[in-house]
Length: 255
Image (cartoon, rainbow, N blue to C red; front, side, top):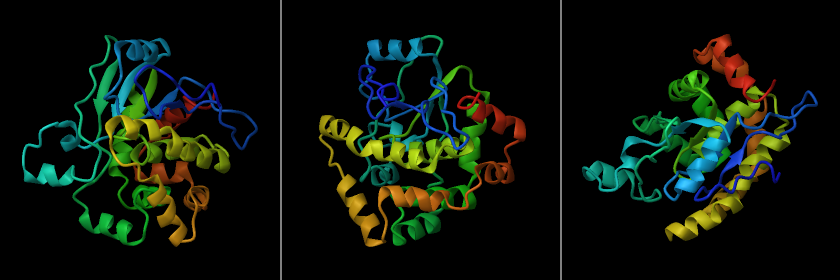
């Protein structure tokens, strides 16, 4: 675990997807993928640590309006009302590429209203509905990752939900043990506490746990539910990714 959790200066909720057990008896490789909260507090020293670790591409999964400190219109102001305060994309060191591919399809109001009514928002229980019903954005992210040079770091705002969906998909593609995928998601609960404290923003983790409990779930059983019957390879192929792209994505984790 200590090899996975990253203490790069100014990074929060950051960890390597390496070192996780696979069903075949191996472990995932380090250095291929790193997940993180947004980079609002990173320092030059932290960015240097990131580059020294081999990260060459940083993916920002946030929506456009989440990168504008001052809202450009009333719609942006409403959209950001319940999110962490917006922050611009990070300035990256030379040799590290920044790519922003928004993961949310914010225009599909009916879908997100259903996710809210079913108690899925803010938890892993929205993962496979997105992958099966609106996979286009996920495919766009993963296709860009397959083409990216070097190690990949990806983040959304707090590095839990959208980042969690991408991590869930990559780990399932690498055939990581279900319990390990669930444990990776759970790490964010404690890892985000100092991030919320620094922003002076309310930590709603307890509300998510309570919402899951009302529907008969824990974080761990919610991840298990999403993995039950989920074939990452078939789902992503049906969504439009080629076998070559899938092999490349998987190859960063499994030699």
